Image 1 (spheres, helix red, strand yellow):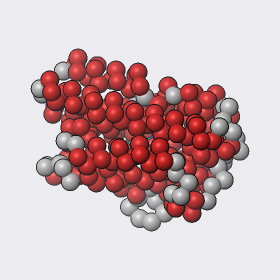
Image 2 (cartoon, rainbow, N blue to C red):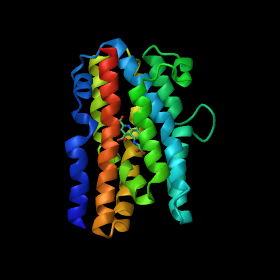
Image 3 (cartoon, rainbow, N blue to C red):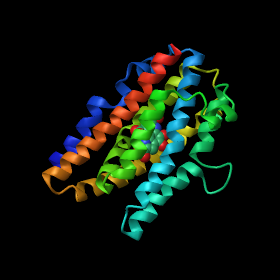
Length: 223
Ligand SMILES: O=C(O)c1cc(C(=O)O)c2c(n1)C(=O)C(=O)c1cc(C(=O)O)[nH]c1-2
């Protein structure tokens, strides 16, 4: 089992979007305001799809304990009431960078490649097994460290974005750690056969490609 965990962790080590040139430039401080706004706007399209894919996962879980665990992810993003939650915090990030809520909610300016990538992730969760859908979320084992670096990079290089706008990432660091710690044991327990392990590894690799493709599209459009 240790070996399988190492195999799982090796996928994002090689292919997660922290390695993407656009992300490297973000952290080096060389993105223009227009590029950053383009990233935030297109990432909102990803963010708004997360509670939808999580609802698809909840519908596949046979056990009340697991459904309770996974439903919390939907609340994390949608909030328990209007004006709360991760989507709201992402909108505030966008506003701090000079975007309007209408621009982000309308989705009019979302790039075609980003739409396809996000559809790909949602459809994996719609049509895949619970094992594949949960395995795909395991990029979250890597997201918290990336976000901590991102917070430092924003504070240092993009001071024109108000500190309050960064709350999305500050809150998300701990949520992501908890999500990853919850999902990993499920994947390790469910993937018993070689085929199941292969399907989990393939789903995680696909998810890395979704995130990579999103940055490819943004990099090309706003340069
Ligand atoms: O900013 C990032 O680098 C990043 C990456 C990821 C990820 O690895 O998919 C997520 C998030 N952020 C995020 O904010 C988030 O809510 C989230 C949910 C999920 C998921 O697959 O369930 N990934 C991510």
